[in-house]
Length: 212
Image (cartoon, rainbow, N blue to C red; front, top):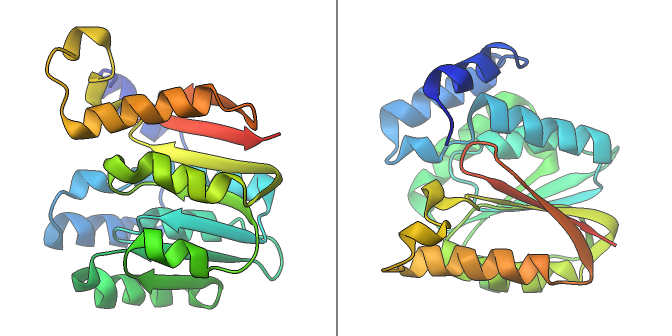
């Protein structure tokens, strides 16, 4: 969304990836389809710092992919806290579980494979931090499932909110289902009196909503 050289400057002047995150980054690019889905160092550090500032007891991630963002958020959990991360791709399970063990954070990461719409109701407790980064057509439904379960002051983050610029009016002549879903989601959050929100132009855009 921004000039590549300027983005690289952001990378260069942000705290760098450590060895485990750099390893996950490399392995994702070597072995997994669509590696650009990886959060990467700037977004990953943002998620880590949000978690460290908020110190969640229960965090939820919808869309694990290869676990990069999971590890970033797990590093900020409060004492005794855990992050539940959900993904539908069972083919990545062994590799991602290995990444979690390598990070040393496996005891506070609850990694579940299946349909998030079915798995979310099975999670006990209210959330302090939620990160939505899965199929765009269900963003609004994921939001509805978690917003009432957020503790006061809880943070919901949603990725890909700018959708490569397709949210702009000049690109809307032929809306695909994912773009429409993102537009509807952004409208829903903006008009939800239960939260206050801001869109951050980090990578492909992050919606940040705080439960009032």
